[in-house]
Image (tube, rainbow, N blue to C red):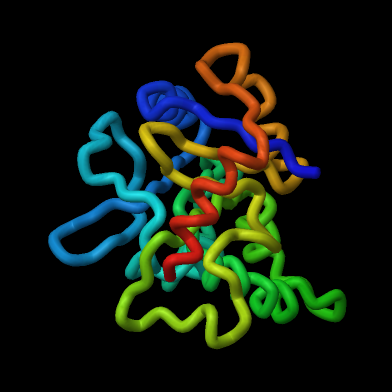
Length: 196
């Protein structure tokens, strides 16, 4: 079973700030009437969780429109991408099948995937163009996410889903107010998700 814990919103902000010293941390932010990923700064005012699709698809982190092939790649920090909806996470299966095909592996794609930690979000609302449920995709992270995040009642509820996620959150409980939670608290997020 996957470990689920909660952390206060205040400690979550402190954790993100600490994390941004070692990683490029991307969070979903509201800008006017749209939501898109932005590089985390101490400004948490416009960060939104549990909402439908950001404008930029997840694949742009792995297949950028342009890339500098001359700069030494190992100078870059790894990415932590937070707030990924289940539909974008499911699309990773198709991208991996194409770009990680054993016959010809796209090494740039592979390196970007390996150097990214994906934290999906529970969708508590749907947008006009959302259609995940019509394809049989539940509005919660599953496959391809390293962790799942839901913002509920002044807390962030995190479910660790992979070894990468476990490594990221391993020391969290020692430094912040993180505490393991049981099924009854997890059901609060499920009630909100079922509404869509």
